[in-house]
Image (tube, rainbow, N blue to C red; front, side):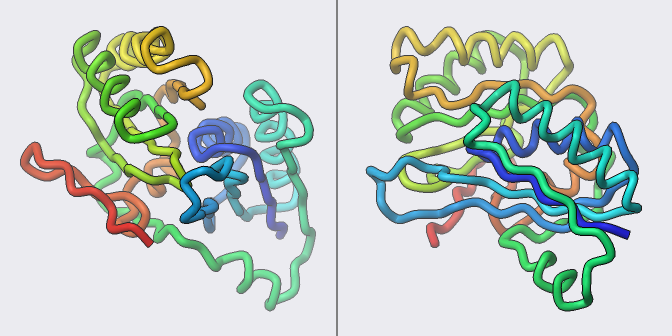
Amino acid sequence: MAIGFLECAGYAAVLYVMDKACKAAEIKIIGIDTINSKDADAFIPLTSQAKFEGGTEDVRTACKYAEAAALMLEGPGEVLAEVIERPESGTRSLSRISKIRLKEDNLEEKKGSIGVLEINYFTNTVIVLDRALKAADVDILDCQKRLGGRMCYIILQGRTSEVEAAVQAAREAERIVGKYNIKTAIAIHNPHPEIIKVLNNNYIHKKIKGGNILWQKQM
């Protein structure tokens, strides 16, 4: 038995690379954390972290795939992947401390592809989201107007072709909001059930009910 750790800049990046890792090896995500600074001028997210466990070889394989995927999105200085073999009970308990509560119910509700957008400032987020929604038939799955500092994020859901179109429209919106205000616009196809567990949480994200967006209470 082993525990793996993956850290990189951006919550969207962690979702993307952990989807790759979970599809490559038999692992279980046991926690995901983000930096939630109250300083709107801070470079946020400084880091996001995923913690996962499984057999030693599976965790090693997952770490390898996660690190390779992360390095496609981030620079080497922003990515850290490590494995702890045969962790002590205290280490396992500490690894399970997480801001996100993982829920395994209603996994069937979120089949398909998802698009994850991370954008600086709420106004820019709404502008980019509007472009994405006009370009494709997608639904808003989750949203948070402060991932940390000035960073916001939106998760979209729909058929693969529609999500790809929405993500492309979001990328092209850099002409309006500025290239450096779009941190990430990426699609995850057929997200692994372990990623769906993260999306099902009710602590960091708020669900959208009846067409109304219920934004997260700021911490």
